[in-house]
Every structure is written in C-alpha cells, then in structure tokens.
Length: 123
Image 1 (cartoon, rainbow, N blue to C red):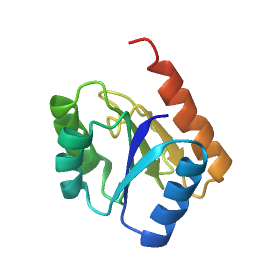
Image 2 (tube, rainbow, N blue to C red):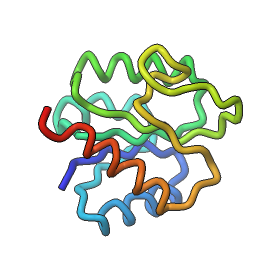
Image 3 (cartoon, rainbow, N blue to C red):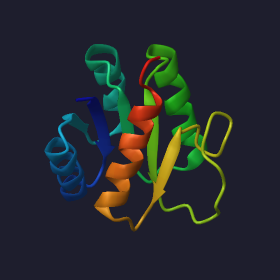
Image 4 (cartoon, rainbow, N blue to C red):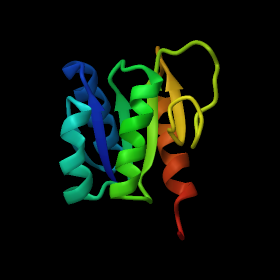
C-alpha cells in the first residue's frame, strides 16, 4: 500500500483516478492545485505524486524540483496532453519520473503507477 498524492484540477477526473487507486489498495490524498501540494508533500510524505493540471512543462518542472527538495524520494507521474514525444525524467521536459498521455485508459495509469512504485522498492 502506497500513499499517492493526486493533483488534478478537474474534479471528476480526480475522483475517478482516486477511486481506482484506492481500489488498487493505495491511500489517496487529493488536491486541485499544485500550490496545495507543498503542505501535503511535507506532512503526508507521499510515495508518488500524480500531476495533471495542464500547466506548461517548464512550470511543472519548477514545482517538481521544489517537491524533490522537500521529499527527495517522492516519485512523480505526469499526466500530459503534450504530443511532442519529449522524454520525461530529471532534466527532461517536465522533470517527472514517468508520464501518461491523455486520453488514457485507467489500466495504463495503474500499470505505470505500479511500475514506479515497484522501481522504488528496496531503496
């Protein structure tokens, strides 16, 4: 069971993601704006942050770098509509550890989440 912080500015999509993650056995914390995530990252210490706000990659990168200063081991999954095919990762287009493009199937999101959480086991 992992603690997952979902930052989703669309309430219905956020609820759908949260319900599916909870059904997969995770504890879900939800906020609507990245500014609200700072407190949750410090207090809840999530294992994974799922970030979907429609912000430009450069702005997302600023938030992600700051969160990594607060909690270095927190993994970040970016849900994006960026069709350029640029790579995620430190120094990449959004600084996220991985990404899922919209539209997406929930099964794909869960698969990427589990992969990120598994890659962090034992560290």
